[in-house]
Length: 134
Image 1 (cartoon, rainbow, N blue to C red):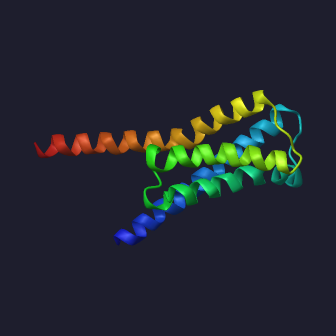
Image 2 (cartoon, one colour):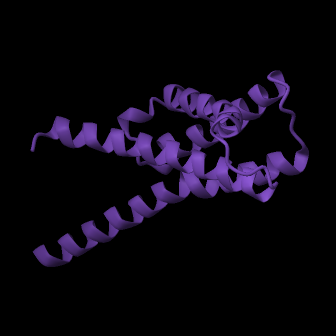
C-alpha cells in the first residue's frame, strides 16, 4: 500500500463521514418536526448544509489533514453552520435562533466528534507502540 493510496483513502472516508453526518443531522431534524422522509424534502433541507460543508473543506484545505479537529474540523463545522444558515435564509427556508443553536451544537458533536475519536485512537496507538519499544 502506498502513502498516496492511504492518504487518498483517508480523505475519501473523511468526506463520506462528514456528508453522512450532515445527512443524519437533516434526517433527525426533519423527523423531530414530523416532516417525515421524502427525497425531495430531504434534499431541500440538506443542500445548504452540504454547500457549507464544501466551503469549509475548501477554506480549510481539509484534504491536507482531514481528521484533525483544529485544522479541518473547526473550520468545516463553522462553515457548515454559517453558510448553511445563510443559504437557508437566501432560499426562503428561514431560520430561528433556537434552530441555529441546536444545529451548531449537533453539527459540532458530529463533525468534531468523529475527529476527536480518531485523534484519541491515534494517540492511544502511539502510546502503546512507545510502550512496546521501551
